Length: 104
Image (spheres, rainbow, N blue to C red):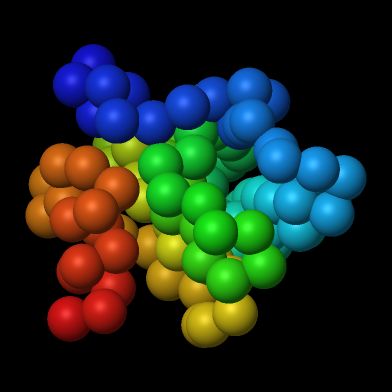
């Protein structure tokens, strides 16, 4: 899938130090919790990070188990020191476009 060309598996995020790792993991947990809070998400199957400034902003790509055939399997989730949001991959083919969509 072309979406995965611009992202890294969250487990492989290259933290600079222990504080960077802690902040990144907190953002990752927030992103997981946000997407799993919706009734249309049956769970997370894959997770990636596209943009990370730990403690400030994270743009995650999740492959979810949708509860309905009309729900997108792949979504972007933006979290950090701002309100969380999700954006479909139809509207944003890469992490920068997802962040731009969030800002716009």
